[in-house]
Length: 214
Ligand SMILES: O=C(NCCCCCn1ccnc1)c1cc(-c2ccc(F)cc2)cc(O)c1O
Ligand SMILES: [Mg+2]
Image 1 (spheres, protein in one colour):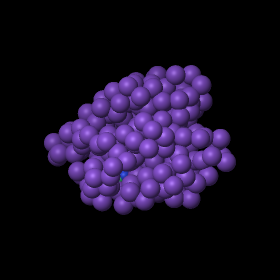
Image 2 (cartoon, rainbow, N blue to C red):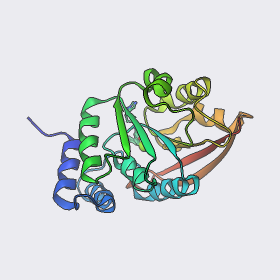
Image 3 (tube, helix red, strand yellow):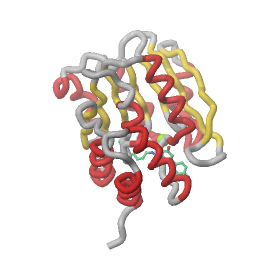
């Protein structure tokens, strides 16, 4: 049977990247998506903004909603100091299976915990599963209609603290209007838009960075 696009992306990593070298994994995926097949990774342009926010926050606890093939997982985990953990949630088992191999190829499996399941079910279990009290950083990149309900759930579960940083992908394309309206108008958040482009295209997109004020 035909391979899937995530499987072809993984093959490109295995053929072009150097095992244990996260930057070569990132470059191999970007090359594949520009020259072979577009895929919905955050990409190199928005990825640089992601990198700068992660470096600024220096999170000790980080959460990613939406792993896909593990591209942003590798981007984030490669910047985390030893002893810190990135928890990444993926609903789609086929995506998760590819992501595990991409993360392992980059040599970052000890910094990442990939959990398969629905974010709405898993977020309330973060404390009991990982002993996490609060997240310093959350990268939001899953179903666009789940952004708002899931940050409200993070608030309810008291998984955010004064100064927790949320960084949301695709706030323009495909778009997350209810989420944007909420974080831009809520007294509990200070929000800032980073204008960019949809991965590997000239279409406008951007990242919204929101600080939880408590
Ligand atoms: O849908 C996206 N991501 C979610 C994937 C499924 C998440 C499953 N999951 C994981 C955890 N809980 C649920 C996405 C889409 C696009 C896009 C843009 C333009 C276009 F024409 C087609 C597509 C670009 C992105 O950057 C995206 O992130
Ligand atoms: Mg995205």
